[in-house]
Length: 353
Image 1 (cartoon, helix red, strand yellow):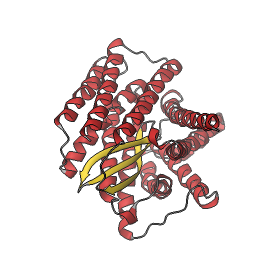
Image 2: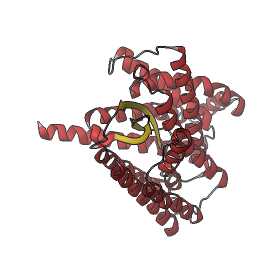
Image 3: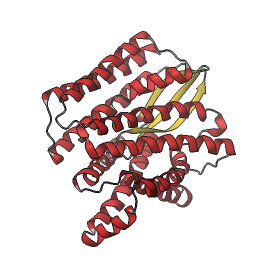
């Protein structure tokens, strides 16, 4: 029985890794190598699939109980989160047009830096000085990686920085906006409501900024039907990322929780982590507990960081093997320094508790 449980857990984590890395690599292939240069439309396809498949999973398959939006105010809060979420995912997908996955992952690893900045600016919560010191190698590593990146592209770099910052902003906003007990949603239900709102935001942006993309896609399909299957598989995989993350969280919670102590009026903010369709992370579920001591949360954070950092490293290696993009020793040293900084940051957070 114990062995069966262990194999089941390994299978879930493998599926989580595979879907995360798979959607990242397929996004890169479509947007850069294949030449499908429509990141907003691609994101809208992802969100459409997440809307439909979330409804099927919750309303028909009853994977989790359906939670309802209880007020207009709650709906507006979810809409605000969805807007920031759209900005993050679209920016991340745009960056993949211009940057190799390895460099994209290095920049994405700086999420803790932006999270700490936004948490301080928006909640006036100060961390221990050692926590801020550990962010120095996080930022320094990206600076070094940028200087040593053979495929550096300024616009792609700015888009990736914007995506990382927006991702951190959403995590902080989520803790502030959806803080009451009656407004909390599990990750599957939050995705159920956020995804269609995201489609509403993305549709006019697609029509305005990627004119006639549907006609162009249909024309491409007439020449190469594989583009249709690529888009369908890619969109389904984007949802599968969220599903596998939910299942991993449910069955191996100690491995998949990411904990931030923002000190919001003595509350402990726990944010469940998932990966966005650009292959980085966005945050879907939070839980607030008054007067929590935080005991044991350091282990949770550390274990999740091990999984997250390993996933990023695997994505880098696999992408280099597949796309054969040039890498430099300086770039890899910079990325390693950033990951090392993130590990130090997680340790500092653990000790501060």
